[in-house]
Length: 250
Image 1 (cartoon, rainbow, N blue to C red):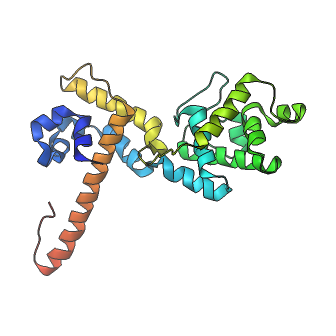
Image 2 (cartoon, helix red, strand yellow):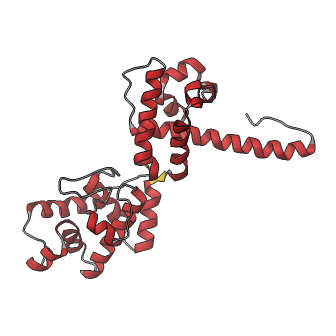
Image 3 (spheres, helix red, strand yellow):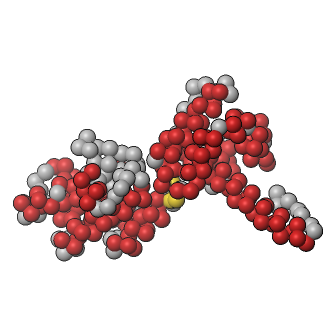
């Protein structure tokens, strides 16, 4: 991630500390260091963050489903929103109904990894059932296998017909999800992070600021990079202390 993107998270911090030492904002902010819940929130996020692209790629390999098909379903179903809930009660990226999710072994439908893996397993089973016929498998994904079997093909439902065409269209797109973070950081952890950011802003007199998931992603990435630097420093310091020379990596 480019530094100017990180600065975009909070121009206020940039104006105080400058581009060359923006990490000082984290180290010197007493509000950050005072709250265990704030640190814990981001610590949890750092443990679970990964790109959605890598999850889809893993699901594709594990269940033998074309990667572009899986991503097309995710885009059509939820726009890759891990917190999406339909009017019918379908949940998560791949919009799994609670009963379907349970049958697939999905413990938390709002966890992007678990939901995508469940959706991949589901469509893989449908493709097998309909002998690799993508149109019928997608029809069953949307309207249920019972309706596909009842009508001997794509059900005469406008919603299902539009859905199939939409997914087939998305399959021809080059959908790059490397920049989309998932895991706990995209779900409840991000929501907690956003709440903490808003609270901190209010405490420092910066009331009325609205933080998005993208803002939280940038901050988490900043903290991850900082933690990596701290780890490298500790390792380097440990090696050089043995030799009697210690130099900063910054």
